[in-house]
Length: 249
Ligand code: GLP
Figure (cartoon, rainbow, N blue to C red):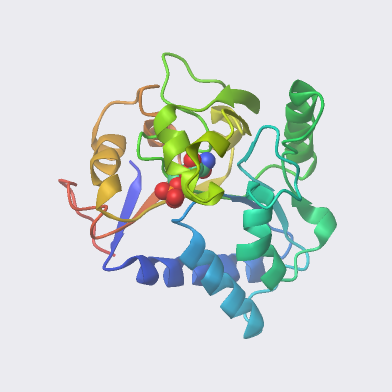
């Protein structure tokens, strides 16, 4: 059973998770973190930067692997997920640049880039703590709902709804949002030792309910977290409002 934690607000959730990440870094300074982009983790990253500035979160020996990147965008492209992470987290903490791992959307050979990423994760000893967001259609990373899911890191086509959800990163110009992306696969994600999925806001409520209380199905990739031994779902009250079994923190 997945552990579900319901917080009153998105900020309370972010503060609690940032404290847990800081504590995990104290226990295991060489922690390997898997990280998401999107609006949901922004308060978490803000809080981690605050804790770091207060001397309470040390990333000097940690490694990070981000989940995904748009195909065709170079790391320095201001619309890339790499640039997003730089703005929201990397510029504010003391990660060693060589231990910030990212899929290169501009790689000439996408398949080779995906294989390189899988090897890098393995070489780092696997992901210790994977933090995830949740697409409103149930995607995790860029593993979109489909008849069948892909296990390893791969190139994938984005659904129109996912492109629309990402348009804000491109000054609301839908035509500028790439049609393809590179993403960790389902096995890449599910091999993490611990997973914490975050979902906030009423728009995610239905998806959160199906992910936790519905069947495991490739039509809702996040439902596969039900198969993981140490997966937790952290929601705010609005995203958790459709749940039958409300496990209060
Ligand atoms: C993107 C990312 C996902 C993320 C999702 C949700 O599509 N590829 O990894 O979880 O958006 O984003 P938000 O948190 O903005 O709702």
